[in-house]
Amino acid sequence: MNGVAARPNLVAFATITRREVVRILRIWMQTLLPSAITMTLYFVIFGRMVGSRIGEIVPGIGYIDYIVPGLIMMAVITNSYGNISSSFFGAKFGRHVEEMLASPMPGWVILAGYVAGAVLRGLMVAAIVLLISLFFTRIHLYHPLVTFSTVLLTSVVFSLAGFVNAVYAKKFDDIALVPTFVLTPLTYLGGVFYSVNQLGSPWRELSHANPILYMVNAFRYGLLGISDISMTIAYVVMVGFAVVLAVVALGLLERGIGLRS
Image (cartoon, rainbow, N blue to C red; front, side):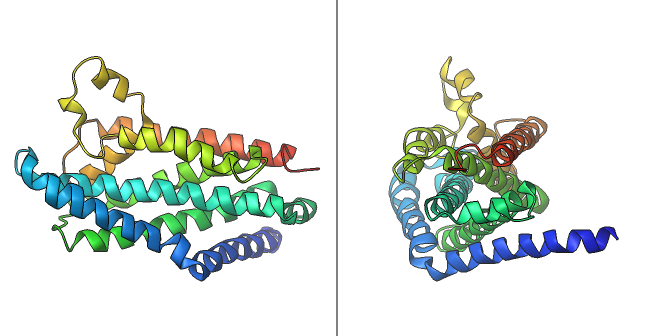
């Protein structure tokens, strides 16, 4: 009986996810290609040109090797957040979300479908950037499980954050405010291009308040086997943010805040 009851929810989840994936692939020049071009430029400018003058940022690891994990995570964060914020706000703008809210679908199915689509885009972009990085350096992949779980958790966290942004957004300009004024500064200050241990006090201590620092370092540990922070703390931060944002997003969806006219 439980299987029969769960089947409509599974079909609804698969439908929303499939629609999101089709959307991503249909406009791949907007969803996938920009990250490939941008990250290639980062590899050329920061990795080859600047990195050749910096040398090894930590013993045995060149600068270009060191920034690869950070650049991959930057692409994952940007695309996971941007996919769900634009897609769900588009559903609000076109009044499609009202049809979903009026249907028998539970709120968690709607949320899970949109998040799954955004996570898949994040994973696709991560794979593309990883392949591009192979033209500039070699990837060792010391801890595959840590690598994959970090990408997955990070993508989930920022997909949920993008969903919250889309719920509150009233116009298309609103979905660009957080990436511009919050995500970009936090990403650049999250240890993508440098080791946080090289910072002096109080900047080193302040950097530990940045959640992206933990995500970048966890992924760097998976690829290179080095990290500036404890893996236990990194996973606590990532899982904690995922749980809190999921509760907030589901609460907003269930109450219809910013969704119902």
